[in-house]
Image (cartoon, rainbow, N blue to C red):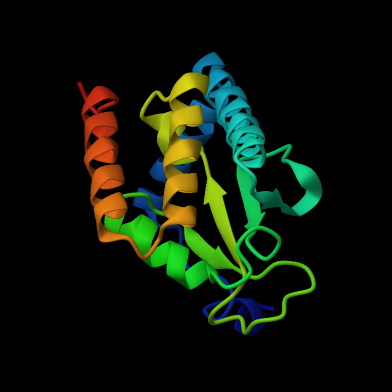
Length: 168
């Protein structure tokens, strides 16, 4: 057993890892973490709702967790997830291109985008701010190749980052 388990599958306890896990588990037990997790899901649901109101199609029609997967094919058949990913990144919104069910493109240039809400929730974004983020995302999806639109969205993203700082 010693040779089969150690050192290949198990090593010695690393105290900094144990300490980090203890802190994380302690945070996860707090009421504040419960509120954060609840707000993360609320924000994702608001994001999903608003994106649909704006004409985008979602895989599964919504979300019950922190992720939203947009299928660009119904509303923007010529637009790829990579196109949108590059433009959103230039505007300061981090997300990634993602394959969708029934994908017709390659995994390297897929038809979907995946969005998550933990980062904006950590900054303190509420439902109203999340609706605005959805509108900014929609503007980029609609005009990803228009530099003026990307710059306008980037300016507003900077303002939102200032309004909702990570640290005070």
